[in-house]
Amino acid sequence: MNHQIAAAAEEQSAVAEEISRSILSVRDVSEQTASYETAASSADLARLGNQLKTLVSRFRV
Image 1 (cartoon, rainbow, N blue to C red):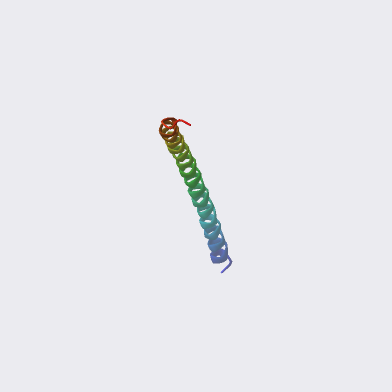
Image 2: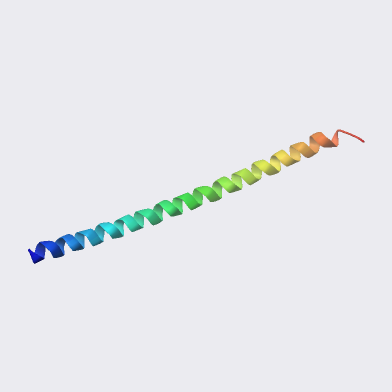
């Protein structure tokens, strides 16, 4: 009986470690994705700013 409890405890510990690694992996992927999306959004915003500047420059006061 004690052997079964010890084996189950070891298995539970291994599963907990695997879950922890999986959570860290998901966190890393989400951080990379967020970083990429932020960079892409910044580039789009800069492009739109330049387009707006071009359009506005046509008007004279």
